[in-house]
Length: 403
Figure (cartoon, rainbow, N blue to C red):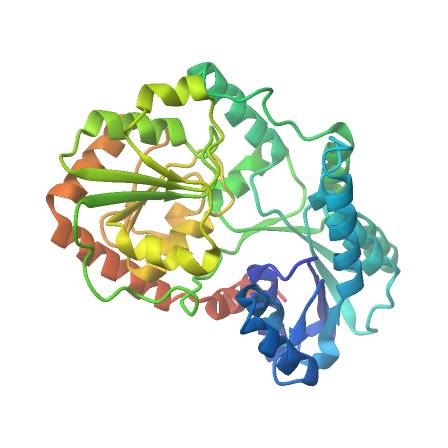
C-alpha cells in the first residue's frame, strides 16, 4: 500500500491535522517538519516541562503521530531562523520566511524517503526541490496553496490603492521575480492542488491550471479557545484581529464604524496597523489599537467582544474567524477568505459583500441593537466549531484528496 509524505517547515495546524488523520488510517509515510516532538516520549515529556514555562512550545508537542513517522528537522528550522534574523533587512528580496521554507525544501529533497511513499503533500514556497524529486520518482504531488494566488493578491492591492490613494505606506507589496518563478514552477509540477476556500480556488481559475483543485477547509481550534460563559458586559464592542491593511479591508471597517455612529460603542483593533498616518488621522479617536496580543491572551479579547469584524478582500482562510467562533463570538466577514466555508449567514455569523460599507453599517447597528440575539448567534458559532475540529478537518481532507 502506498502512503503520503507530508512536508511543512513549522508544524502548521492543517499539516498536523492531515498527518494525524493519515496516521490513523495507516496512510502516513512520514511527516517532515521543523522543531517537533511526539507526546508521551522522553523528548515529549521534556518539551512538556519546558512548555509549562514557555506555552508557545505546546504547538510543537504532537499527538496522534507515531514517533517512527515523525521527521523533525529541528536543526534545519533553528539554523534557517537564525540566518533569517541575521540577514533581516540586508537582502530585501529574500525574507526570513523564504530561508525557512527554502532550507526545509532542500533538506526534505535530500532525505531518504520511506519506500512506501506514493504521494507528496507540500506547501507553496517550500516544495520545488521536493516536487522535482517526486516527479523523477513518478509520485503524486499535492501542492497546498494557503493564500490566493499571488496575481490575485496583486490585483486586489492595485484596486484598493486606487480607491484609497492616501492609505498605502510606501510601494505596494510585490513578490520578487525569483519567488514568482518558484511559485509558478511548483504549481506546474503539481498533479493536484489543495486549497482551504472557494475564493482561493477561484484565484486559480483564470490561470488555466491543469491539475485538479480540491477545497479542504481548515478545522476549528476548540481546545485552544474555550467558549465564553456569558454575554459581554459594558459597552458594545467590535473587535478586529490581525494585520490591518488594504488587503484585510480595514479602510472599509473604519469608514463603516464612522458612519454607524453607534452610541457608547467601541472598536478595538489588535495587530499591526499598516496604513498611512494621513489616512488614519481622519478616524482619529474612533478606535482603540493594540499592536500585539500574545496568542494565549487572544481568547480574552474575543470573549470580551460582541462581534469580530473581518472584512477581508483576499485571504486563503482567516484563522481569526475560527478562533473567535470557538469562543462564542460571532463574525461578520466577506466571501473572500473562508467565510462561506465556516459560516451560514444569519445562523452562526454573517457574510457581507466585499467593499460594501453600507452592509457593514447595517449589520454592526443591528448587532448593537440586539445584543442578546448577537450572543445567541455566537453560541451557534461555538456549536458549529465543535462539529468541525482540526481532527475532523484532517479526515475530510484525506477523503477529499483521494488519499
